[in-house]
Length: 208
Image (cartoon, rainbow, N blue to C red; front, side, top):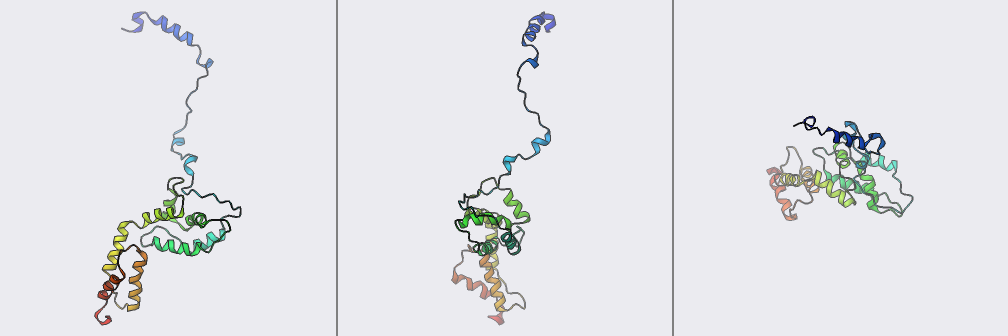
């Protein structure tokens, strides 16, 4: 049965009359936004992934000349064939020359390391969660986990155990190429006594 049939419209009209005009009340309506608003990253998400330590020294400023020096000497793109361990090693060699009184080495390393990344590697560090990196050791661990996973270690171990001398390659050149695999994979797990075996068996008969 409808309200008109039941004759109960009068109580409803009286109830609406008692409520009065909505403009007479302080009604808080939800803020309206366009769809673009919800698809836009808010400012709180734009914080750096690196939580830089407090440095009491007032003379700590990022040097543009140091950035230029690093960018021209040690850059990592995250491409296939690049060695993340070699990149960290070269970075340490250069950054160790930057000394600022009262500034811990960790703070300097955290400030400058992102400037050595480009392309996909720069995108990787920029998309880490805000304030998720607190020390350089922490950053290096994340960097190696991303660009030197266990699968890459296994591949380098295979290159060591299946090493072969190239045609027209001298013993010296072959040895340098062979030992470079160990530098790329310091956690290879092979003993010093083992290292000579694969190299010897890889040589051509006339070179043994």
